[in-house]
Length: 124
Image 1: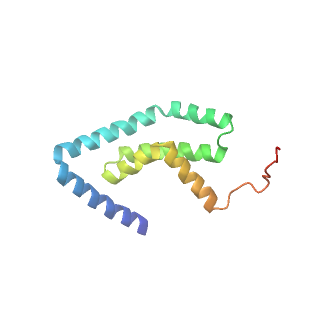
Image 2 (image 1 turned 30 degrees about the vertical axis):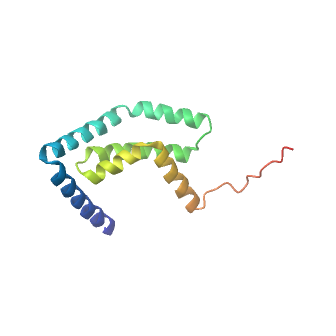
Image 3 (image 1 turned 135 degrees about the vertical axis):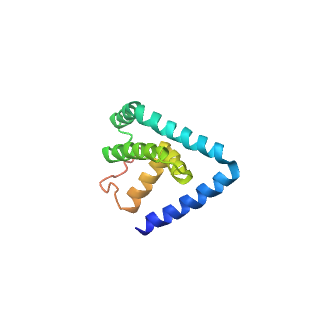
């Protein structure tokens, strides 16, 4: 609950600050453009899903990372549809697979999820 209140406080402060500096019309255009981008991401999600399936088939990521990447893409698109500057920033960040991969890798290391059976081979 406290995180939602902090988020709401930051969203209001950032939205008021940005809208007062760029004006009402540009704020409206920003809301409309970000909603359009979010909807187009949801419409084109099939292509993203196929790309992620290809990455899984080449064993570049495991199934858990595959699920997380797809969830980040969907959640980021929904955040882009919701009006607000902070939600737009978070939604755009979630669309970049580099950022989400770094977050997933950081989470996996912090939670202790690593392969202990890995032993490097000496190929001399």
